[in-house]
Image 1 (cartoon, helix red, strand yellow):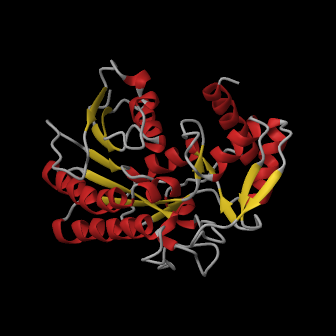
Image 2 (image 1 turned 90 degrees about the vertical axis):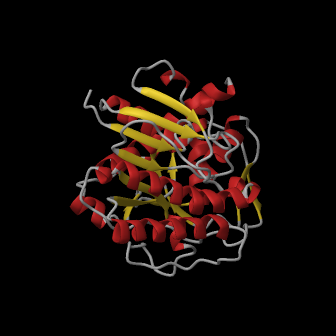
Image 3 (image 1 turned 180 degrees about the vertical axis):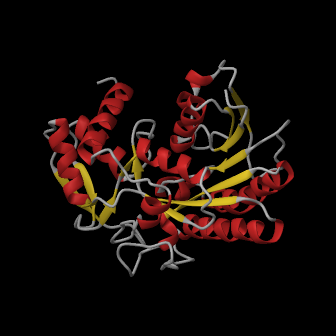
Length: 314
């Protein structure tokens, strides 16, 4: 035990639950806060009863109270896939604005270091490639996706204001596309959709012509990046993601190949404001955090497919 106590908002979600495991593994006492709007108790069930772990069922857009000392706050509460923020647009805006404000207020009172989970979506549909942290982005504020992009941009501004005005120690991570076990099957993002369809030998749905790219990072690599950033002195935004870029069509083909599926690929209309390209410049992470992804895409996809097979009872 290292006597450090950490609050993770959104701790029952995909990334949050992996962070609970990571910090408990490093001897921290973890307080997990989640309203379960998109998180799941299944992700943290194995931690219930662990003396290092506490779960608080709470909506972080309301007043936040945590008894005792808190050394670190990781603000990961938010719907995070297009299907979620189209279903919960106002909650998405509120958790990025009011939720960030409440979490930062708690960090100020507790004298805790605060880490904001921001996103590559702050770059919108980028006009530069790859995306560096200095890029201001190309976001449509009134598009249907804008609720997530602008919530996170506001959250970054609020975080920097608390750093500059109140002297709160803050860190900002810009997370690029991440995948791995504990993703929801009905998440709506490409990898869970492709895997679920392929494992059922159903047609795999690719949007547009499939030429749009993403750079996908396995969750264990991302979590290590978050851990290093939190404990670093880097107080400006840092990209964490895997620069290994792939088109959606090639990703679909790779998943069909790994699963041995008989699925065909079908094409549907591209959603509004779907970014055409996405690739992180991770120079800062490499040079200042000594971090870079270690798990190759195929290895990570195989691990994730095994998880989905279990979840689907296959």
